Length: 418
Image (cartoon, rainbow, N blue to C red; front, side, top):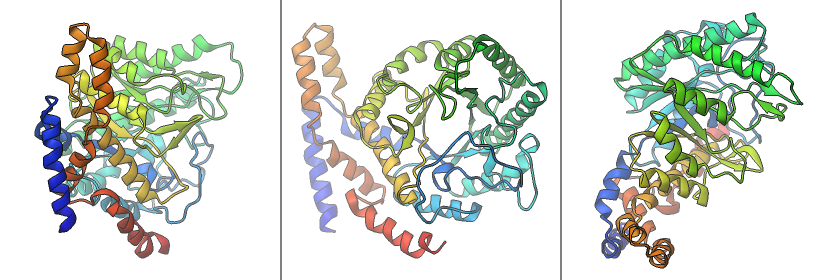
């Protein structure tokens, strides 16, 4: 009770402080409450999925670490997500890969998936006040190899085209069930480990595959296409590069996915926001933390994520930018990883919403660049954390570090016994 009083007192002081620079804190709280983040299912089980195919294998993705307690089945995964939601303010989404279907004891290959394999997910999400998003799964299968949708072998290519078509049909069913568009992300690992002399060929094949996949129009789902700089064991060439998907998205009016781990570390993903908003209908974000390569570390409150959030808010584009997570760290407590990453992403957006933007733009319009830079610097020290604590308090979730002991208790009582 004493801590609650301190949080409320600090919030009132912070509100006055922000009011002094023209920031409406209550409006910021209303906006952060509306921010729905798409939680990724694959953090809970290290991207294993629930397929019953005895022949599945082939790589194309990896999770690092062997921390005990990963989810081994649908019930455990759902239980873990329900635990995560206890520490997160707001209403959010849940992002499934195609390999996480409720297949029971049946062996269902990727080109055989149907909406019925995901109906129990739809019901569960509805009960938990979550909306679903979806992903086709091109990795970890005997037919994955180095090339899927860009494969010159028609039999291999047609297999993955059929899988992706069915993934879109699943997404349509999800969107219709939840009365809210399901966003389906298409990412394939296609590329070459060493020098290729057929760059144009593979990209032309990928374009044709995408045209065939997208030939069916749906009303209850949205497509997004995701690029990558390189893949492990495919370092020299990626068919679906940023340039490829940016061109395809602009030409075909498709949403482009920006994964913060899929670019060179010296690139600013934040800088891409304003350009994409001009030429593509919407943007999907996959937020992770790259270290030296696309290592998918847990998102923290870094300069990169703060810059990303600021660009979105400065462009008044929350209604055009969808925020999802995409890290999978198997070296630490997986529940804790979720909580850290989601809360860090929320903090970044709250910070952006608390920026004294009107005064900053006034300075810029007047050519007052000293004043602009000075206020940008001083804004970093404004008491945003008091607003964050109050946001958590009014949503009845753990304030500050209180969630640490709660996650530890869940590990003791649940995940350590797996």
